[in-house]
Length: 248
Ligand code: UDP
Image 1 (cartoon, rainbow, N blue to C red):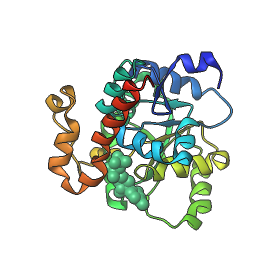
Image 2 (cartoon, rainbow, N blue to C red; image 1 turned 30 degrees about the horizontal axis):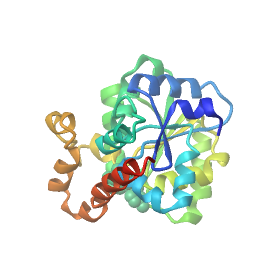
Image 3 (cartoon, rainbow, N blue to C red; image 1 turned 90 degrees about the vertical axis):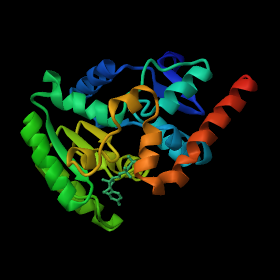
Image 4 (spheres, protein in one colour; image 1 turned 90 degrees about the horizontal axis):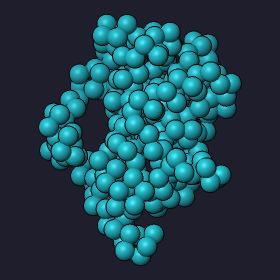
């Protein structure tokens, strides 16, 4: 990687997160729409960066992204402790919500891939009603790997500008990484459980939790079965602190 490229990125345990605010991330995505090859956008949180710290392949997949934003207070705090801060949290859900509401993307078409069939239908309905979103196709996220060719054909036949992939992390990042060359889209974004939120199945933490960096605590209370995955958050902080004490 070139040095000037690295200047705009924060090295968080070997994952290079873009130092961008939400508005800058939107401009970059808008810029990707004018390019020839598909560009990828991933939004890792601290748990995912910790998983990438253990798994070199996942780290390479994340670092292959054209735009990597910090989804989660943990990544922002970690980057500050490491002395290479990202300016703000850019949660995947906030990023796509801002995109749907922005005039920059008024003419943009979307394909939604992921979530359970009923959730996906509800999310499409809500997005069309609330934002007048131009959804040219959709496909639920329950499939066998050998179905991927048919899914890609369906996506390509719909000619979307942007493909939103909601298969959960790291499945969505792996799927995008392995298939992006076959996809005739301008941008692929991994969006986690966002369709469930748009469908009203899952609630985002109240603003007070989000602002005080405690969204993880709200999520743990609401979805306690996530606790195993969330144990990676203290592990992430411990690894960051050790790295800081060792001088990186
Ligand atoms: N999902 C899917 N296919 C799968 C596994 C998950 O479409 O094989 C969907 C799931 O229905 C949900 C989303 O992926 O809509 C994952 O949400 P979760 O909140 O677990 O993801 P995270 O944001 O934590 O990555």
